[in-house]
Length: 422
Image (cartoon, rainbow, N blue to C red; front, side, top):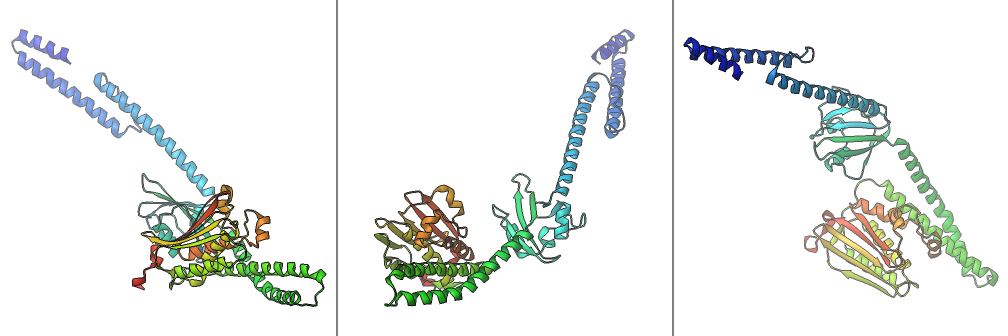
């Protein structure tokens, strides 16, 4: 281009009209650049069906770079489309439901399984909030908590009797959420049958055990009983008492599992209750040398007095039971901005780390032989867990084998009532 302008200037100088010739040369170059721009713009608009024009110089380099970027974009677009189709095929074939939600819980996409279980319709329900289509208070509460580690098991009766497990996965970058839905109807029914069986069997066993215990008590107190039978009768009395305790624990656990919703909100004097439980522990023939109670607050707890007594009595009973005579048990009640807390600390045999996750399972024992010898049923901590859940609380367990254990009950601040507010 510079050479053309210089040549035009030389010719114009010879002809005596240098400025006119240079102007004509620049106008021609401008027209040529404009024509290349028009051809480039037309190719950009029809690049999917039109071959790139034959351009030279700077325009050729620009065209080559643009064409290379476009080919790369087409490649990645095709790759994303292939992955998206594969993802849709996989999610359509998977046994679980999947729902993609936007930042405001609006439905962006769902697979066939989710549509079948929740009654969703393709395209019609896109853009509508999931909680407007699946109206269940438990699901709304779970979504308000933005999922978390726990999942929500919900009983839906709209299109049949079905139990569904919802789990929400949230991305921190886009704010979109993936709601995974799993059908747990079979597990829920089996669990319900098991609970009903345990409750019915425990209820039916209570009457015959009462009769057996009565006769054994009468035999044990009979002065004419043959001395040969005194030890067997005493052992039978001990085992019948243990069986009766197991039945009572099973009935208590079944009652807690059958009750839905939160516990009542009666004002309970935690300090007085713990003092009575400590007094009972001190009255045991076999107990640690020291059982101390520390009350850092006089606040009350709003809850069920029976269930709270069951929680604290089970924890103290376990601590006393598994702490040697030279050990000690410390009980503490205090409050802070997070709520109320009851701690039971002992210097007993402790629990190995691998057993801690399963402590609250029914009938789970760390040492089955030792538990039976001490009269444990394996149900105490299961009762504690269910009763705490009804009060919105949770149980923390810290233990070192051979050095003791610490069980702490945490209650929400809404369950704490100060004396001056009572």
